[in-house]
Image (cartoon, rainbow, N blue to C red; front, side, top):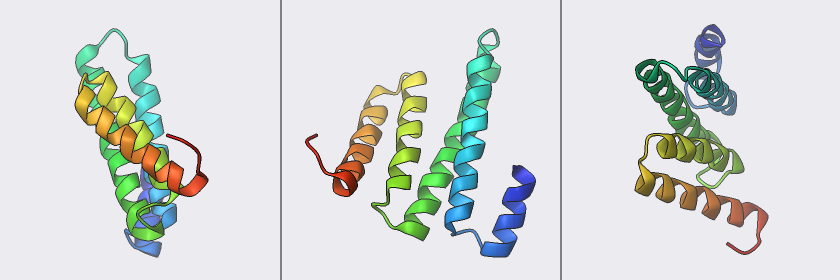
Length: 112
């Protein structure tokens, strides 16, 4: 995926929906890998940080290429929120989840 990311960024530039999707997929890989590292907490924290960076890049790129309130932004924000929960950053997680919910309500309606 990293090699594909380089190719996408060269072809489409940094701000493109495909680049956002690839950042999200890289984040998923790192997050799943972190879940498997239950016996090495230091390595698990390091890999979760890599996932966080990827999801943040996905959310930022999706915002810039698709719009601030695109549902894809909310999907990455939810993943960011769960990583903050894993890091016991509860207030940051709550803020992130609320932003994801706000975006989903704009797109799909319903009660909060």
